[in-house]
Image (cartoon, rainbow, N blue to C red; front, side, top):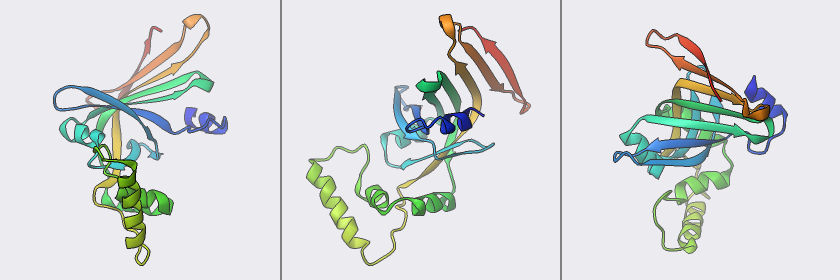
Length: 183
């Protein structure tokens, strides 16, 4: 219901969410990614499998997501375990992307130090040339992840900072319980 209300309100980048990861040394990191799908199984986003976030995920599958819609005074916090989605699902989404984004996935060694902007632009030129005569396929180092939630917190802003906070926690038996949290 909240998702549909956010979409209907025409919020710019309604699907922007913060992804928080923790590396093998216990150091946290957070960045914005785009929610590209959700269902009863979880929340899907796509990235470079060689990126900083992917390295964190490889060493620690526990992640957190935050979706914040300032205009609606709403926030959703999601915690769970993350895993790669199937290559078929990643291929399908990749092929739906604009050509420039497909080329960008090949050209950018995401999170790596590069010498200059020219390096990146030269890579784009190289891959545009390579794929001028053949179909652009998904790079093996790029694809999707699904976050399978084990807790949610729905925060609704209210006057006098007496916000509503409802937490849903997944129990060992597969049932969800709801708890009201103080603001």
